[in-house]
Length: 216
Image 1: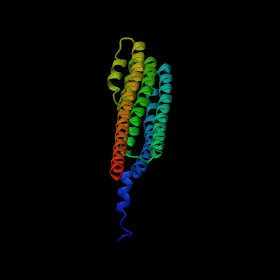
Image 2 (image 1 turned 120 degrees about the vertical axis):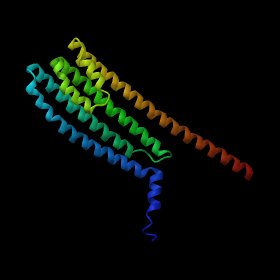
Image 3 (image 1 turned 180 degrees about the horizontal axis):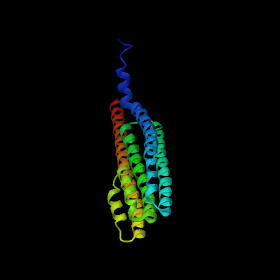
């Protein structure tokens, strides 16, 4: 039975964070592959909109599709980079907090990349296609959270140039705001972990001094 008692080693791995490191590194790599596959599946049908657009609209759609590919690449790269960061985290106390800190940054970076790319792509579509851009933008709104209100403000603007500009600037500002929030919460977690580690060291130092005093 001793050879089959693998749970103590597994529990120790859980506690030290090694298993969680590897698991989340693997999960993020799988997600990167799924993002590329899902992106390709959504990317191909969007070309069908060319039948509804004039030459200017087709140019806008081509630019939109190019930015769509760039967005997929950016998100996949974020996932792969953060998977490596999690795997390379040095073993220390409060590993879970450090892993969650990286995951919070990952979420913010994914959303920021998507929104920034969406802002550029949507702004270009509104400039080239005008009100008829609403169909493809609503498709984009199902992929990127928080873009719905921005889409409505862009396509229903009285002036399409202003609408496209609002969409572009709004996407960038929204991306920066999400990124700021994710980094803020990530750094709060790291600061909390550092405070806990330092407090533990101080307490350990006081305990050693007390022990030396009793021995003296």
